Length: 125
Image (cartoon, rainbow, N blue to C red):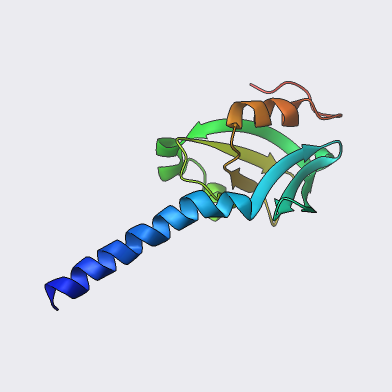
C-alpha cells in the first residue's frame, strides 16, 4: 500500500465520523411525549419507540459503563444512539424483544427526568 492510500483512507474515515457525529442528529432525535418515548425522523415524523406503560427504568450511564456489560441482556441492547456522547440514556422496558434501549439525547439528565415523570411511573433509584 502506498502512503497516499493510507492517508486518504484515514482522511475519509475522519470525514465519515464527523459527518455522523454532526449530521445524524438532524435525521434522528428523541422526544418524550405523554404516552412514551418517540423517535423523530428528520425532526418532523414521530414514530413511537416505547409506550409509558412498558418502561421499567430510565437512567443515565457513562460511556465506560456501557463497555462492560453487567447482564447478558445488555449484550443485546438496542443501540439507537446518533451521537458520540460521554453520557447515555438507558431505558429498560417490559418488552421481550426490546429489553434495553440505549439513546443519546442532547440533554440526557433532562430526558430521564421527563421519562420518569410519565404517568404510571414512579421515582427510580
